[in-house]
Image (cartoon, rainbow, N blue to C red; front, side, top):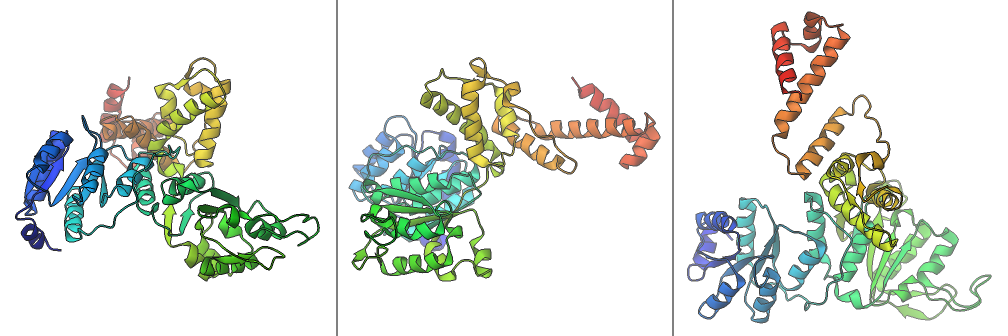
Amino acid sequence: MSRTDVATATSQRAIWIVDDDRSVRFVLATALRDAGLVVREFDTAEAVHTALRKDRPALLLADVRMPGDSGLDLLAELKAQHIGPVIVMSAFTDVATTAAAYRDGAVDYLAKPFDLDHAVAIVQRALGDRAAAAEPPAADLVPHSLLGESAPMREVFRLIGRVAASDLNVLITGETGTGKELVARALHEESARRTHAFVALNTAAIPSELLESELFGHEAGAFTGAQRRVAGRFEQAEGGTLFLDEIGDMPLALQTRLLRVLAGGEFYRVGGRELIRCHVRIVAATHQNLDARVEAGQFRADLKHRLDVVRIHLPALRERHADIPLLATHFLAAAAQALKLPPKRFAKAALKALAARDFPGNVRELENLCRRLAVIAPGHEILPADLGTEPAVVAGDWTDALRAWASAALAEHETAIHARARAALDRVLLETALAAANGHRQQAAEALGVGRNTLTRKLGSSRQRSP
């Protein structure tokens, strides 16, 4: 739908923006008006209620957190009155909020701060398709321990909120320890299947000769030691969600049988003759490259296509350093509560030090560290010295260290970091070059590729800036 078409379609009905932040309303309204749309602005949900007595919007954009009724409250009311479409906006993106927004009928979710061109495009797309499908009714939300405020995690939350209510199979990819099971549980808990079982099975942790029985169950006498009928994970998960972790390690023979179940929705227990029908949503996860395993003949391409209907990639912790302080604070509080210990908190410098680390073991490694600190760290405030020895930065890794420092500084909302980084870079290079040249400035300047006067000037400037 072109901007001209949208403007024509909304000539009698305006786009409504409700947000208690005047600056957000102003810039968004200006961008929409520049696109040829008619816009009305409101600062509270109550003001919208009053306007609805006389008028209806062509589309409404609502902030989640506002004084009085929230954007989600307003969304639920508009859905009950068949008024829409509605786009939800928020600076506080999490699984529960995005899932609730989509479940209550939001056609899209704008995470603040947003790109104005992107916001205009979303509005135009929503206006072009006003027959949004009805979502399941709202229900009590189950809190999630899947946390993050970084851009990669916001995209993960958005995908979860978008696909949770569907019955599509989902493949979760990501390194070990990134929290793939948490994503699977979030998909289950935010779906209509949440009243049924969530059953998890790590296919790599079960011996191949027992995995078939674990999945499909067995009859008494099916093999040595099978003294009674046992239901498998598919039967246990009936009506709910079956999470198959490390699916890339499943033996080829079982891949064939799993494919038949996914294609036909029915199976036999091991040693059984009774055909069992199942209605289970499959969420699979792997840390491996399934495409590469398919190429190597280690994984069936047709099974991959059955599982990989929607893919959610969970980023490594080193790809979202800004989330480390939030995660660490949460894990420390959770550990103290679970272990019945006095609460502790991180000093600001300790959170900075944590945010500079890469954590090869990802979120699991960070959680284990926080549990250990809850027990062994002295006092109520955790200092950098309590964190243990940090791996040394080896030659060639200085850009990674710089990236980690910048992520930590931005997470603390520090300013002028570019100037500070350049000053530190000049000082380190100059002092190191002078030391290597035994204080001979001309030799140091030649090694750095700068003139002697430039070196002298920079050295004097860096010393003036040094504390």
